[in-house]
Length: 512
Ligand code: NAD
Image (tube, rainbow, N blue to C red; front, side, top):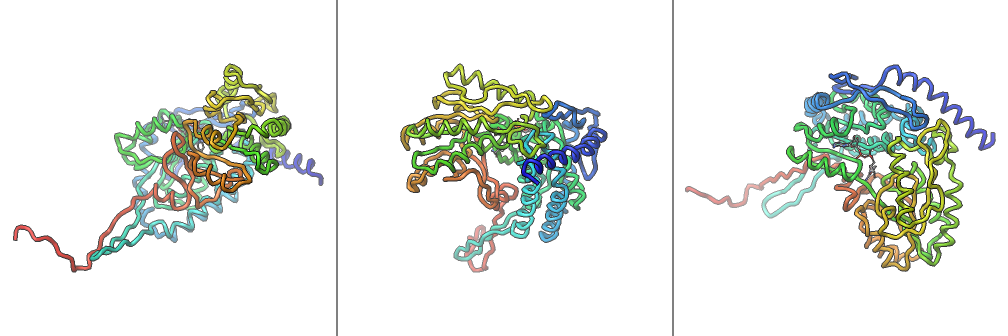
């Protein structure tokens, strides 16, 4: 079989697989999952989730508010002690079962994620597998979650241990929602916390599947609950609920600020993974072929709707013209198409409003005096959905809005620089600080620049390659706190100090 015909067969198979899944979604709709059962909103309110491919209604979704959040938070509170106190070995076994259940439905999850978000199948095919890996990774850490230190002093042993913080809220965005939510929910459950998840209103489909799979795999009722709804009502109510001890949030920086204010009265612990305007810096001594591959991948994969996307290319002026020519040819050749077609490299954007936001930057670029070298238009794709042409903006200055603001689409801004210090200055001259990528053949320079960049994660001569034990998170307006490995447990657990006296120290005697 040729490569083209096998891709065509897979596309046809994906379309076939989608049919019964969509029929079921349309017939059943999506409810909240609270205390081990699917429930409607007490008001009966619903909203529609639509496919960005063809604007078709995928499902009516229960629209939750304060009442549903209260029910879910109470349920998580009631389930907390038993979940905290089961043996770590049992918890580990259950989380591995969730991973098994995700793997068993991986093909369905991939297809549903493509249709609900517009993300291309070539990337989503692995989304469920990566989600299962997240569960397995944290399952294997259940037994060490409570580990601490002994810091002995003269006459005491000073032992630290960790205990789960309690019921937590997890609020997630719509980009790669299935994989991303497991990245927050798996460590929370492994730590011994119970969870109320509020998924993004633009992508509720696989969030519903996840909580039901977890329940069927044996996660006890109330341990993992999901409430659908809008940020300003369900999301807000979750951040204000007194039974919820911490909020793990992924989304826009401005929403993070709002959540911090909303959670102030109940002293919420917060963990924020927010926006980015990440630089990729290419020096003239770099391996330019590999750098080009990475530059294209890190902004045009996942529709550019990716927090760690390298949305600013800082290119050394000595090689700028040559590099931009090659880059433009690659961007022109990108395959925009139906997300279920494995040949597709860029699918439709998530929503009409997001499409409008991304397209608004075409005029912003022109008004600021930059040039649109490729793209700069919507794209007439299959189904007539929210497609945009992959866009390359050149001749930009570091202060322009296209060099400062997060566009969150397949939109790359190129800024030339002269030398190392100017590159660092431009890279750091934004409000964000999530990730940075550096391409150079000079290891000394790579380390100097890595040290100087104001960002939580730096990749040298590499695109973003995730390793689960490492810290994930941003500085400045890109976030507060870190996920990954033991860093996740620092957020979902309280560290407790226990001091044991050897019985020999003097105790001051008062009132003798
Ligand atoms: P968003 O902030 O609009 O929404 C995220 C979630 O917050 C949604 O579930 C929404 O309903 C909820 N929400 C909105 N207002 C709320 C409020 N007042 N109280 C409580 N909850 C509220 O973000 P989005 O548009 O869905 O996602 C895109 C953003 O997410 C981008 O900025 C992107 O960079 C960021 N992101 C960051 C990371 C990271 O790791 N740093 C990862 C993925 C996405």
